[in-house]
Length: 449
Image (cartoon, rainbow, N blue to C red; front, side, top):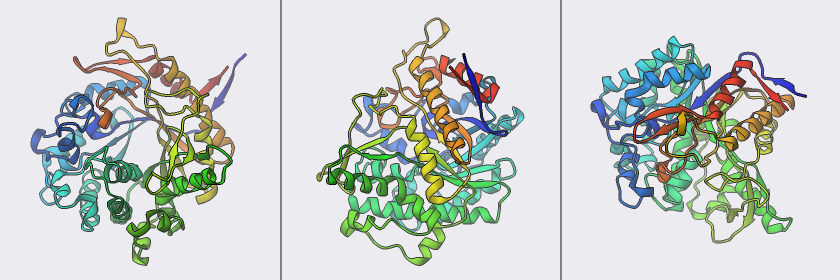
């Protein structure tokens, strides 16, 4: 016997991508280099030396890709702009051909009844700005606001939803603290500075949108419940620090106008208190919050780890993705409820949710059977329904990712897509997870066995 559990009317059903991960042609038509272009071309930085030079060739195949979105039944598509396509030097003269590419994409989406949700920054910083200090230079707050203004003026009449930043925590933790992402630095002090400037840049972009506002604007953060590995006091304390570092470091200033009390002790000498004017800038009113959820954080004390003094340990009883992440749908319900309880009933969108499981490089007989991903989507969509039933104002869900793509320092070794990509031929093949997702979208409901 089966039952059907429906989603709210006007629910946004989408999929998400980012520019450097799918577009390819990173220097085409006058585009400027990004920090990720340089990072990926630096020997030893990425698996097998993989780069985004071709990726999914979306820059040339966008029309074909929009037809796939139409086949899926998407009514929304989240993608990012490559800052350097629009402003090759990061500031100054605008590259008209870069604007034209995104205009064509947006127009094609609208023709198919697909709402664009545009992210201004998904990790690919113009290399010219990186040379000037990147997120360590306080001037980047104004650089980012100016770039945002160019995008708002160019596309604001057609783009109803914007997000400023994608996962600022990852930008700092992976890029400035541990060095596994561009720009590849390893500095506690730099991580603190970059976090401050990202927050201020977010606020400056929201403020810039105020004069152009015809739609809605928010920010995207990656969140994970932090549960202690044991009942030992040191593990309990570690889980609180991990929560402050990942979940509250950005949301508290944006939504509450203050920083978590634990951060000065956690960052030590690297910490500088926020000025009142900074907190005022950061706490610009936003219209919604995007939440990316992939895994839980079972947390164990480890004094060797900077800031958190904690490590994440796997649950041996859980299914794990190709990246070693626990599959834990309840965590999505918990995070959506936690945000609502802590920050109020703000409109929420699950802007990324998905899993890397093994898929073959070639689609045999024109199909890819991915039962683990189907199960993942089914269970996490059920988690969204549970959160809605318990009071969270969730208004949309975006599967990560529409395509198998360039997974940053992991290169092309991890496949997150619901559409398979043969990287040698660029052939797209919808996986069974895509067909499952299309059925859910068509029904606006999840059939529960």
